[in-house]
Every structure is written in structure tokens, then in C-alpha cells.
Length: 232
Picture (cartoon, rainbow, N blue to C red):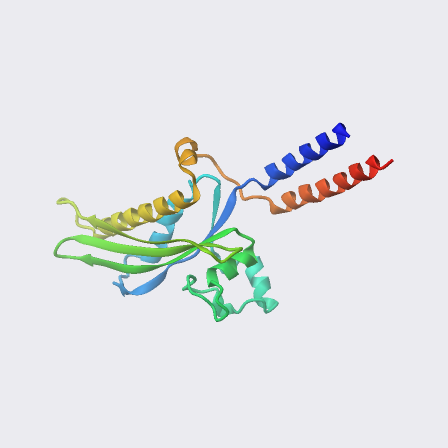
């Protein structure tokens, strides 16, 4: 009997390790608020998304994916009428008629654990002060439960130096500063302080959910065989 329980404990530990915990976060494009100053020479949506991705990708035990409309799983879901085509466009941090978050619904189709969707609330450059300001807001959502784990809004500022003339330098500085603040808030919510202090930067791979399911299935089969054998 001791042997049987040893096998069970070992298998439970293997399942626990397989399920450990690199969580997947789907990062959605930003929507734009009314206070966004349009400019042809600077794409604030792309720059903000890139800056925030750079901050999030180093959070311990988190694998960050960028949202792609061309994702095969989304294409298939549209073809099978499981989601409407207009539901894969910003804003993603809004609730549908049934109360579910749009980001959570899309995230569920892609099999991720978390979603982050937000808005560029403010973006402008003042030629007189030579200062750029950007405000980013967003919601971190648990895809499975629909719970909002974090709502955040942060402002970044950037100003040209006395020997600089390109406004984009100030704009980039403002975007990076805001993204750093948002990223820090997400990190504080997802990564315990001990992990933040000890985690070393490393290349992360997307969790293999199929392998995890195989481990669980194998565990079930072996456990059944062991328990069956114990009856003889």
C-alpha cells in the first residue's frame, strides 16, 4: 500500500509542475479617447503598445501575446459564428450586452489566462512648452472569471532639451514614462514581491497546454491502473 501511495504522490507532483504557472496575457491595441491630438508623424497607438509590451514581457511567470486579428483561432471562431467580426476591434475593455468583457470573450477563444485592454485618454504636444503628455488607462482582466484584477491610469511627460528640435523625442519619452508606470502596476498585481526581487530576465516560451492535458490524462490512467491492481 505504501508503494501505491508513493506513486500517487509522485504523479500529483508531476501534474502540479506541469500546471505551474506561466500564465498567458493577451495585450490588446489601445482605443483612443477624445483628448488625443492627431498627428501624422507619430503613431501613438503603436508606440504605446510597443512600450507597454516591453514593460510586461519581463514580468515573472507571464507570457505576453499581442492581439492579432489574423489569428487562426479568431478566424475560425468568426466562420463558426462564435463571435462577430465587429467584436474583434477596439475598444476591448467594454462590457457586452450579457455583461461579459469583450477582452475576456476574445481571450477565451485564444485560450489565454489574462487580458489587458485600455485606452489612450490624452495625448498632445505643446509647441510653446515643448512638452508632450500622454495618459494611458486600462483594465487587467481574468479571462476565466471575468474579474477585473486591476484598473489603472497613468500619465507620462516628456520635454525637449535645449539642443533638441524633434517633437517626437518628447512624445516617445512621455509614452515610455506612462508605459513604465502601467507596467509597474501590473507587475505589482501579478508578481509577488519576492519574485520581483529574485527573478532574473530569461527567455520565456508560451505554455504548452496540450502537453499539460496529456500529463493529466496520463496521471488519470496510471492512477486507475494502480488502484485497480491494489484490489487483487
